[in-house]
Amino acid sequence: MPRGWWLDGLLVVALGVLTAALIYWSPLLRLDIAVRNWCDAHRPPPLSKVMLVFDTLGQGGALTLLTVLVSFWLAWRHRSVRPVIPAGLAPIISTLLIVGLKKWTSRGAPHHGSVRLFSGGPEEFYPSGHVSNSIVYYGVLAMLLAPYLPVAARRLLQWLPGVLTFVGTTYLGYHWFTDSIGGYLLGLLILRLLLRVPWRTVPLPRWLDRPPRQAGTERPV
Image: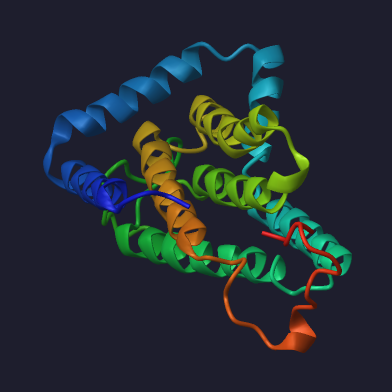
């Protein structure tokens, strides 16, 4: 469980400042264009295939399915619905926030639409949903599987996919550089909020949460 709220507040402020800067500070837009142009000029096919794999790590549908399947396996193993609750809330919260921001900001993609926010076009690319997904879902998976993974493996599962997705989706020109930054900030905020809930002790009806058979048995989540 995260300690203190200062980092959560900092994430909110950082996301707000980034969004405002994209509206009022043109040099940031020029940075986005410069990063896109550099990536376009340095994209050999073998490396592009690797980056496509990195980008796929943040695919929301596949991640939702994986997280839900893991949660149901844990629910069956522990005879408790507790693992399913955070796994089910993650896609709901993520979808509401990401889709809401995308529709509100109405920003184009690096190769079609406008680099400016509130462009009025059909494109909706800020913030990056793939990057946010890779932070939220792998973080929830790390939480669910914490009793079964070494600390190093849990840390890698929680943090590495987000970095790889950030690099892949930006390099391939699927998102502006600042789209990926925004997605990372939003995903980290959502994950911290999910981790704050004491899932192990949330009161539940007995028929949804069978007590452990013996003392010392690990509770799910």
